[in-house]
Each structure stands twice: as C-alpha cells, then as structure tokens.
Image (tube, rainbow over all chains, first blue to last red; front, side, top):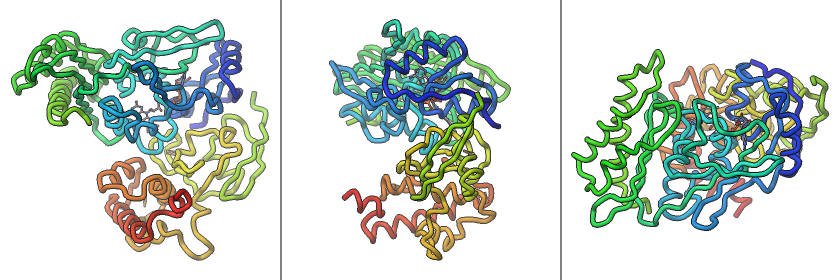
Amino acid sequence: MKPAPFTYQRPGNLEEALDILAQVAHEDGRILAGGQSLVPMMALRLAFPAHLVDINDIPSLQGIEVEQQSLVIRALARHAHFHQPAVSGPLGSMLAKVAQNIAHYPVRQRGTFCGSLAHADPASEWCLTAVTLDGSVMVQSRNGSRELPAGTFFQGPMTTALEPDEMITAVRLPMPDAGSRFGFYEFNRRAGDFALAMCQVMFTQEEDRMTGVRLGIGGAEEVPRRLGEVEEMLTGQRLTEKAILSASECAASVITPLEDIQTPVDYRRHLVKTSVRRALEAARDSGNGQ
Amino acid sequence: MDSKIPVRLNVNSRDYHVNVEARQTLADVIREECGLTGTRVGCEHGVCGSCTIIVDGAPVRACLMFAVQAEGKEIRTIEGMADGAELHPVQRAFSENHALQCGFCTPGFIMLITAALEQDSAPADEEIREMLSANLCRCTGYQNIFNAVKQYVGELRERGGTDNNDRNN
Ligand SMILES: Cc1cc2nc3c(=O)[nH]c(=O)nc-3n(C[C@H](O)[C@H](O)[C@H](O)COP(=O)(O)OP(=O)(O)OC[C@H]3O[C@@H](n4cnc5c(N)ncnc54)[C@H](O)[C@@H]3O)c2cc1C
Ligand code: FES
Ligand code: FES
C-alpha cells in the first residue's frame, strides 16, 4: 500500500506548470490536484506515475467566478467550496445538493471539481453535472488552449479527450434561468460511496408545462449522458405522476447499463428507473430551488 | 528518483525538520519521522478515516497527502489536543459518552469532529451523521460517538462557539 517512487515538482504559476507537464507528459507525468483519486490509485499500485506536477500552489487556479452568464470553476475549487450555495439561484442550490453526495467531508476538503472531470469516473457527480448542464471544459497546454463541450469530453470510463500534456484550467457551467427547477437523486449502498445510478434533471415551466428539459444519467453507463428521448417525452408535458412514470420507464429501457458481479443489468435498469422518478419528484416538490 | 527532500513540518506548533521521499505520505512521516504515533493508519487509501488530521484548519486524510505537500502548513494531530492532563472537550465528551472501545479509530474521529465543528459549530443532527459517515469504527456502532458530538455541540452553544470561531469573530 505504498506508492511507487516519482519525482515531485510544485510550480508557483500556470506557465511553469504547463512547461513541466510538457516535459514529463510522455513519461507518465501527471497533475496532482486534490489527490483524492490519484493517491489511492497510487497506493493500490493501479497508477504509478513517474512524475507529479502539484498545482496546489498556483493562485490563479483558485476559486470560482461568474462571467458572462456562466459560472467558471477553476482547477483548485474544492468540492467543499459548494457546501453552501456558491452562487445565488438554482445553480448554486443544485451544486450544494450534489456536493453532499460526493465522498465524505474530509475528502471534499481537498478533492477538486476539475480533478473529478479529469479522472472521469463513470459515477462522478460532477461529470454528470457538467454533461447535464452542457458545461465546457477549458483545457490548456504549452501550445495553446481549447474549450471542449462536456458532452464529448468523456470517452469511456476514466478516459477523456485530454492530451497527456494538457491540463484542465477551469470548467464553465452556463447559468440556468432564475426560475429553473432541479432535482437530483443518487443511489448507493453506503453514504459517500460511488453511485450505482443517479439522475439529475433541470427544466423551466411555462404555464405548468416543462420546457428546456435537461435530464442526465450517471453511474449507470460508461459515461454520463443526457437522455434525449426522455427529455423529448417530458417537453411540453405537465409533471404528473403519469409523466414521471413514463419518463422513468423510458430511461430504464434506453440505457446500456454497466454490469458487474453485484450489479446485474436488470438491477441497474431498475435503479435508473427509480433514480429518474425520484429526481423528477424532487424537482416537483422543491419549488424552484430558491 | 528516490532521493530525499528536506521538509519542515509544523505539527502542533512545533517544527520538525525531516528528510523524506516524495512518495511518503504525511501519515507515515508524522508517525515514523516525527514519532507521533497517535495518528492511525488503517486502509491507506482514503476510505477508513483513521488517519484524519487537521491541516490549515481542514480535516484531511493524512494518507492522501504527501509529506512534501505539507511544507509550511499548520498541522494538528491528536497529540496536540489535550492541555497537559486536561483533555480537550471533544476527548472528554468521548470519555463521558463511552464513544470508544478499542480506540483505534478515536484519534481520527476526534480530529474530524474538532475541525468540522470549527467550520460550523451548530450542525443539524443530519449534518452530524453525514460528517461522521466519513470515518469507520468497528466497535461502537457510532451511536455513542454521535452522542459525544451532541454533548460537545451543546457545550459550544453555551460557550458561544469554538475557540476558533471566537478568534474569527
Ligand atoms: C473514500 C472516497 C470516496 C469517494 N467518493 C466519491 C464519490 O462518491 N463521487 C466522486 O465523484 N468522487 C469520489 N471520490 C473521488 C474524489 O471526488 C476526487 O476528489 C476526485 O475524483 C478527483 O479530484 P482530485 O482533485 O482529488 O484529483 P486527483 O486525485 O489529484 O487527480 C485525479 C486524476 O485527474 C488528473 N487531474 C487532476 N486535476 C487535473 C487538472 N486540472 N487537469 C488535468 N488533469 C488533472 C490527475 O492527473 C489524476 O490522473 C472519492 C474519493 C475517496 C477517497
Ligand atoms: S488510513 Fe487514511 S483513510 Fe484509511
Ligand atoms: S473504537 Fe474500535 S474501531 Fe472504533
């Protein structure tokens, strides 16, 4: 349970970090952010990077900011930053609700939002959030920067569109309408465990009818994704018992569930059905998250 | 690659000058180089919470930080809690509520609770349970740990916050 040897560098600014990363990337050099996924993997010898570039001392990567109708979450914003609503309106309330479901209190003090996206666990709450809200991932290397839509950033379990010499500097989440309603539900066997299935939903209402419906599923498939079929089904509908039931049944049938020895496909479909139902019920019962 | 790096660790207000490999966790260095074995190491991958210490005011898993990352930070461990023979109020609450049996998990719980209540001294019962779910105890069944926290929260309410809150006010 001891990590393999590596060299360690702790640059004080972004340019230096990107230079070092460019030098070590092809020898399995990696970013060390919160360390709450990477260090356990190193202890278990599932990962043995030869070089670590610790970004924790880079002031420009800290915190969050509201910028042109979106929330910019920088690379060192920790999960605990969202314990209290970090912005007013439905987005802040939803992020606070979601944050409670990530790991445990001490893990949330160090783990980062952007690190979760880079790690790309299929059951990561922040990966689901970025996909459901159509966030974008701001990526930078010594050679330049690009902005990738969250919907195509995740390519498989623990696999993303990041190049080895690239770093996530921030994630940008569009601010939903002030009157949006949201719901989130996650099933796991013990508090703080990774989700076996979860659903996140957001929409606005015009005279009781849902518009702008976003419904994402995580923990159940290889990558989190929005379920277009279910969103279409709900659009223009009232949020009745019947609509909730049809939507949850549809979700369960359209997914391609992950399978393991404790979680057969049928069970996972059942959990997805329940998660969708409970997320929609939460959206119905919660008001607009104010 | 396995050459040693000199690091100054400030633990319980005392400086320790140690030479460590980058791969040595803060938990191992506190135990083996600083000789402070009150911090327990259980799972070594972030799951059990027995290694919880306080770094710059936050409760963290000491097995998930490398010692080289803790240079210059203010570290608190279980050894810094009692004032001579006088127990810290969280320790006293544990003792009075039978919140420990074998005691292996106890230092981690004490540090978790102390730091969490410095951040928010009036948590709701549900928040206390959620916070305690971070750490594992194989003996007590958690209820007496919960009772100890409730007692401490009550004492804080009477006193008007933790010392740390007092300092911030
Ligand atoms: C007991 C326990 C329970 C947990 N439960 C959950 C849970 O329920 N849900 C959940 O989502 N997570 C959970 N986690 C993981 C936790 O949320 C991590 O914090 C998160 O997955 C990774 O963020 P980090 O900042 O700690 O990244 P690190 O561990 O530092 O890095 C993870 C990976 O991402 C890369 N990386 C990190 N930051 C960047 C960046 N800015 N740019 C490029 N690459 C980067 C690293 O190189 C590494 O490969 C749990 C962890 C523990 C120990
Ligand atoms: S030893 Fe650190 S969490 Fe178990
Ligand atoms: S008292 Fe024995 S593990 Fe908690």
